[in-house]
Amino acid sequence: DAKTTQPPSMDCAEGRAANLPCNHSTISGNEYVYWYRQIHSQGPQYIIHGLKNNETNEMASLIITEDRKSSTLILPHATLRDTAVYYCIVRFGSGNTGKLIFGQGTTLQVKP
Amino acid sequence: DAGVIQSPRHEVTEMGQEVTLRCKPISGHDYLFWYRQTMMRGLELLIYFNNNVPIDDSGMPEDRFSAKMPNASFSTLKIQPSEPRDSAVYFCASSLRDRHNSPLHFGNGTRLTVT
Image (cartoon, rainbow over all chains, first blue to last red; front, side, top):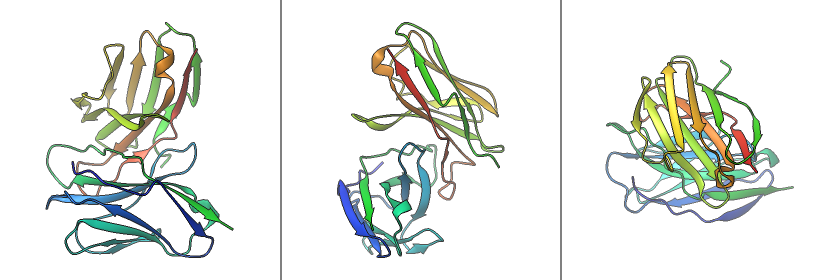
């Protein structure tokens, strides 16, 4: 699976958009970009995923560059409860592996 | 749905003792994963099953660790004998199928402390 690079930490003001970047320059054509987050002492929680088109759900938006070498997770109106570690992962979309390999993630601190 | 259920939530044991962690996946899910999380190493995949069969156990640290899935609704992770370096939070996760649109659902973990 392709490796990802994320900044170790970020701050965001409550009510503002949080934009979390991720580099995945070695991503291959059949690998998807997934985002999970982990709130302190809980299990990781799925947020969103995409292949090449931008995606949006009730939690967030995912913007993937045209060359697919990087992406941005957007939390449109961050709240204090969004404080968590955010993981960007690339994963095969089909085939014989279901593995998710987690990196170190970005610790997002939402401040009042 | 109650989600992925892990037990116990906390386990404290002495070095050398056997430890058994338990997981009940979401009903209907046919993939089950065991992860371990420590401050030093982050989240590590230990093993995963498909339809109760172990597919990849390359992350299992050593022979002291074993995992079983006797049926679709239950899995165990056993450490025998336990050592202080096994102290970590152990997560179980399940997913519906190995498809790109099938996210993993995680339990809330078992915090293991080996003294």
